[in-house]
Each structure stands twice: as structure tokens, then as C-alpha cells.
Length: 440
Image (cartoon, rainbow, N blue to C red; front, side, top):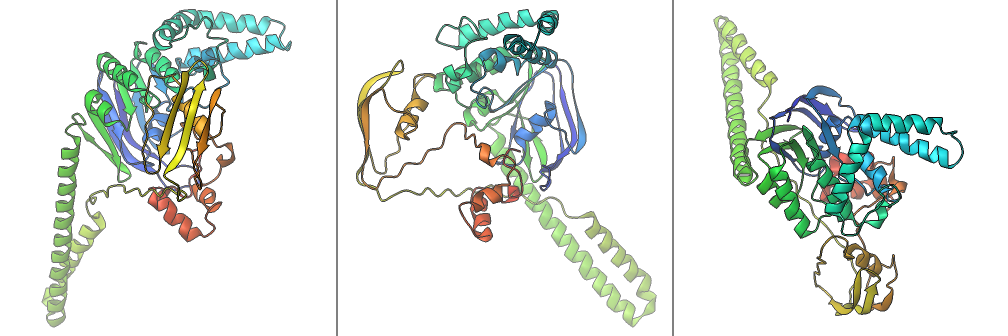
């Protein structure tokens, strides 16, 4: 186990406003801390800095021992990779480098661009660093995490597993690794209800120092022993669980409001006193020294600045556009997907809110793809009601066409007026990210 010490960290995306500054906190050995805050304040960015994916603009941090990191999109952004390639990306730094070199050498050997010497060197380095022992751990985690038998991780594609199975495989590997520090970005994403319960228990018994980002209130309440709050471009720490966090924040907000009121009252008092002394000095020059002293006290007080105000809660207003649908919006007749679920029939009516639940890998996401027209069912048919329009929001909204573009420019594709586009971003709490690149 090791501690995580962060001091005066600051960061601003290239070409955009500063995201945060003066972020300082400490996670002691064995603690399980969670970073919380509104969308877009930089929670995941902090983990990316700590895992050396990006550089901070200022400040410093330290971590001892072995550190392993899991990004929120692990196994999702490169579905054509093999499971071995996915697991290499969450290995310790030295093994990650050796693993990437080994994969590249194997491909070079297969396409005839390597005479075998490069492959032999890469294989030797992999073994010397403990690669074979790591592969044994991979296989054990796969047996615990994936329902179907996996004989060869180097040939099984990531896309053959559901999002939840991929995530559980990586989580099982990291939480049983014995690493000193674990950085987990939204570990609960893609997990079904039983696997979320499994995750909670695994985090509780894990002896590693953990710093995680999560929006799952239940996970935070049951697993976090410290809360690091990112808000107001800085941070503060609640040294307890998420159960007591709302009350602690409410008290802090009240104190900040009281402090600001006291500052405003004192500023008005000093200013009024200065005005009185200046009036007296105008009538009698003997009061000039006192008037100058009063002015100096007021100027120094104002220059020191007020205390931070209470942080406004993020308000998000979502507008969903839909057609004026008839009573029945969708009818499923004997719909089935091979190897996932048997034929079933169902109707969805206007105004209903339908949830798909079930274990990972049973076809929930696949059924949504069928409903949205991305895939065809193996049997049966789906009929939509008149004037029904279908929108879809996927687990991974991978948009290569947005890479390198600013958020405002993307919205302007649909809304031609900049003022209206900014109002749209404001509804989703993204107005401060208008000039930020989509992929940052």
C-alpha cells in the first residue's frame, strides 16, 4: 500500500479556459477515496494526470510502489483488439511496454517484415519482466469473469464479450493484483446489478489504496472512505463516507455564505469609515493621517479578496425531441437473437419508460441495436407506430468526426446561431467547455 499526495495541481485543456487550480488532497495507505463533482469539472482529468497520460500545467503529486490504472472506456474504444491486447494496456508500465513490443513483433513476423530476431528479443523481454506469470493471472481472471470458455486470449476478440464482461475482467484483474495504488475511472459503468454488488464487495476487501471516480451513489456510500470534491475550480475533502457527504456539503455551503456576508459587511464598514474620515480631513487637515490610514486599511482588505462563495449546484435541463406518436409506438413479434435470447413478443406504448435488465452478455445492448435499426433480429419483426421517430444513445458514442473539434462548433452544425448554441450548451452544464476539444 502507498499514499497519494496531490499538491496545488492545475490544468487547462489546450486552447481552453483553466479547468481547475489549487487541487490538493491526500489519500493515505489503504484508503478508498472517491472524486466527485459536477460534469466537466475535471475528475477524470485528475486521474489522467496521476497516471501520466497527460501533464498538469502546475503543481505536483507523488505515489509510491506499483500503480495500475483503468480508464472509463477500457476495452470499448478498440473492439477489434484481442483480449490480450486489452489486458496489456492495464499492465504495469514496464510490462505494458514489453507487451506492446511483443504484439508488434508478432505482427511483423506474421507479415514477413521480421526475420525472427525482433520477435525473439521481444519474447525474451516479456518473459524476463514476468509476462508469463501475468498471463497466468489473466487466465484466472477470465475464468472468474467470463461465462464462456476462453482458451486463448491472443485470438479472442474484445468485441466477442459484452461491455460488462470486458469491464469485469479488467476489474477482477486489478482488484486482485496486489498493486499499491489503483486509479479507477467509473468502474461501475456497463456492469449489471449482480456484478455491481460483486464490485462493491471486491473494493471493500481490496487492500490497495484506491482513488476512483464514480456517479453511482450506492457504490460511493458503501465503498468510499473519503470524498474529494472538485468544485469552484478547486477542491475540498470530506473525511468520511458519501452517506454523510450531503450534510457536510450543506454545512460548508452555509459557512461559505456566512463568511461572504461577513466579508461584504466588513468591506462596507471600512469603506463607510474611510468616507467619513476623508470628509473630516477636508474640514480639518489634522485628520488627514487618519483618513489615509482608513483608506489603506480598506484597500488592503479589498486587495486580499473575498472568501469563496457557495458553489452553485449544476442544473441540467434535457429536452428530448419526439414525434406525436400514436398509442402504440413499437410492436415486437417473435423477436429473437441467436445464442442470446429466444423469441418473445411485446408492445411499447406512448409515454412508457421501459428498462432492460439482465446479466452481462445476455443481449440487452444487442436488442437496442435491433430496435434502432442498426442490426436485424434473427427471427421475428418489429413494427413502429405511425409518426414514431427513433433516437439512440449508445454506451460508447465514438464519433471520429468530432475529434479535434470544439464543443461549440459541433453544436453549431445543428444550431446555426451562436447565441442559441451557447444556450444549448448551458442547459447541459457545458457552457464553460464551449471552446474545449471534444476528445479532451
